[in-house]
Amino acid sequence: MAFVLLFFGVGALLLAGLTLFISISIPLQILLFIVGSIVTLLGLRRYLIHYVPNKLDDMSYKGEEACVVSAIIEGPLGHPAYYEGYVEFHGTSWRARSEQKIAKAQWVRIKDRRDLLLYVEALDMDQKSPEASRPQSSRLESTNQE
Figure 1 (cartoon, one colour):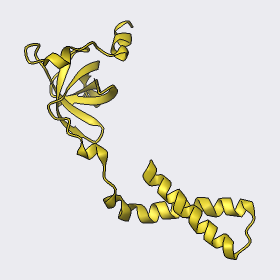
Figure 2 (cartoon, one colour; figure 1 turned 90 degrees about the vertical axis):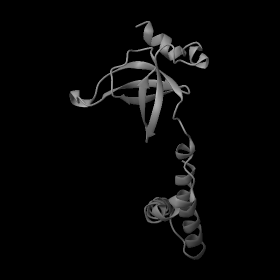
Figure 3 (cartoon, helix red, strand yellow; figure 1 turned 120 degrees about the horizontal axis):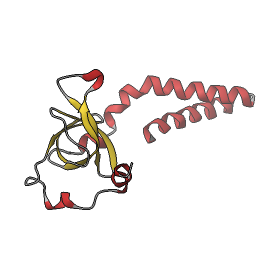
Figure 4 (cartoon, helix red, strand yellow; figure 1 turned 60 degrees about the vertical axis):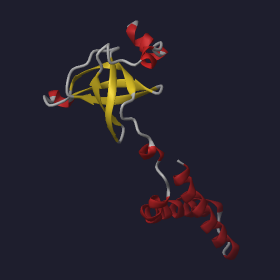
């Protein structure tokens, strides 16, 4: 979000520089601000994105445990090769994909993450770490009551 705001700042500075030399009406200033911001966003983003660290890429989720909040069952359009559902991980609901069906409220281990999709595998009760036995979140409890 802050990266996008940078381009609004550049658009504002361009407009401020222009209004130092030319008298421009307020509606035209607003239009030039919007156009300048969008042009700088589209024109410079691909060059500057390489200099901004991506926090998601720095996080390693492999081996972490999560709880299934929506059963991992058939994939999109009944795709037979994998199953999809949702897990709760660090207080957030993530879309999850597995090679097997996994019931709601079961614990899983994260094998990989690609963008906003977690690849998971079911944990057996004897594999579950002591930390994983912590109380389930309120969202999971509210979905169990339905």
